[in-house]
Figure 1: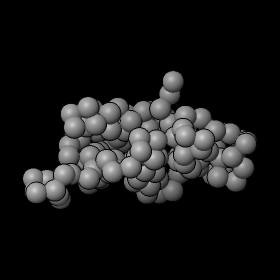
Figure 2 (figure 1 turned 180 degrees about the vertical axis):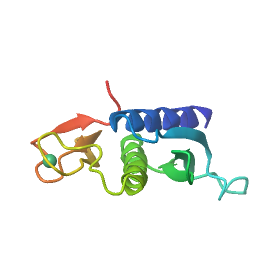
Figure 3 (figure 1 turned 90 degrees about the vertical axis):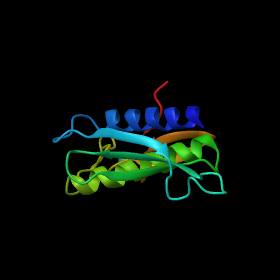
Length: 129
Ligand SMILES: [Zn+2]
């Protein structure tokens, strides 16, 4: 579980880094097992990553009950939603040469940022290699 928490934290860091400099800057405030279900007789089903830019903290979930690549896209997509909302609708991360943001999706077993209009136009791994 500790490994999963540390991994979810590192994914959140990579996602925030990919957005570039944000004003005000976003920070990861906490990463821990989802307290909505833990402690309880059940295993926690997510790592909750708390992050924000000095205003209201937001929560993005890294699900533990799916495969790693799907969990990475879930977390990236939730962070993206929070960041876009906080910026009033900036296209982040922007698709190169297009006006829209990229979409987090699993393709061929890897978690990518993809062009939502044409996946062959641009794609890059969410976790830089
Ligand atoms: Zn595009």
